[in-house]
Length: 111
Length: 113
Image 1 (cartoon, each protein chain N blue to C red):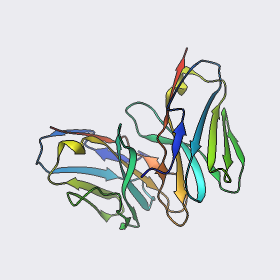
Image 2: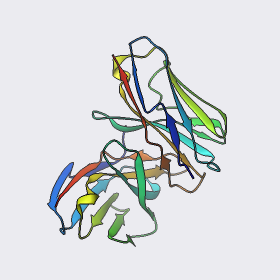
Image 3: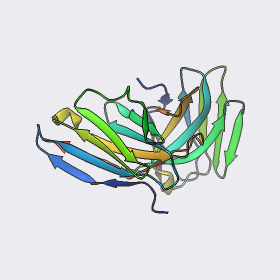
């Protein structure tokens, strides 16, 4: 069964607006990652946040992690039409190399 | 680097036939993962290997599915016999063990009629 649940399932915004996606998970983790998937393509790693970190930035991406609530958020600032994709959070249960992916958020950015 | 290579990209087969999906991981990566993606079930981990050894195959749906990794540069996922409910996109991903970041291939879209 999937560990991560994301909301919203779908999000539509205009270019220039910010997009926020949330992820909840169930068990203790080493790290949490966010991946992006363009239609018909494989997933691409965006950013990793460790369990002892609370916030991380990479370009227009900002990720937060609250281990007490077992939740994370991904913020994309100043969105572009090219950001249109599905976004997945992924967690790695302790003492394993595998990733458990969330259900994903489909982001549509209109020009 | 060419990235993770999967073949074929598309496969259409009839129920009951054997299907073999292939994956070449990124050179130097010692962990390999097979996933299945469907609209209903999302992205599911089927099996993963470390240093060519299967570590966790708990996601393999049933005995019709088998995976091998005979060497560090090649892995196969076989379905025999195939069924319509196996229709999905199958992804292979590789990783340097302990690095956490996985690199995905383009996927194989399997349709079983």
